Image (cartoon, helix red, strand yellow):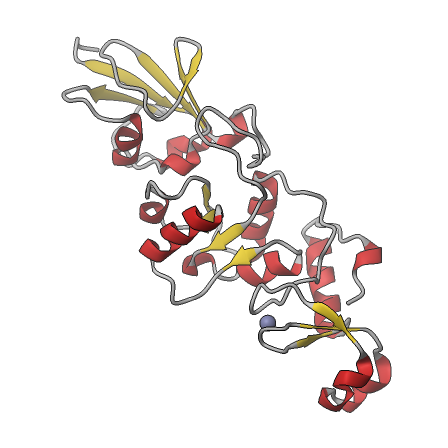
Length: 259
Ligand SMILES: [Zn+2]
């Protein structure tokens, strides 16, 4: 190490994100100008959303830390930090707390939207939203951005996010539920899978004319989305989703599965 360099160590799953030469996660970084630590790590390939602890000389620091030649800085991913699974309602040195866990899903992981909504999570998504709009909406509505796009997660307006590693939607769901501290899933099947709107119970007689004969015969409890008017009941689609969640180890409280 020469006088003008600092050693940056990216631990655990952060190592795989490095796009620069490194030795098992350690980068020798030339300090040639004053730069924020956020800009430094992102130039090396690591979105700031993936870093949960910045340690120098045994002390935690925030993203305003300035690089000093001759020092060593360690960056920890969520699963090696003290806040794991990540509880977004808890303040840390790196991030202010959010009021609740709410998601914003990027187009490249769009399959997560209906699954998270089915589990009751407030999940914003629209296929026409571009990166700039997603960043603005995430900041405005305090949402956690889920994406496979590193460039999106490097945007400063995005405070909480997860660079989704898996390419298979069921694995992506498990990844999200493992990564974030999720409140007990108490309200599954309470949101419209298309609109994210909370559905409300509706009397059968008010919608009976809209039902197929078999549905009319076999089901008595229904919910409806006030936005798109879609009607939900515990039919085969509902049962298949419950089976799918159970295969993934996600337990749905039985009392809450009635529409
Ligand atoms: Zn709807």
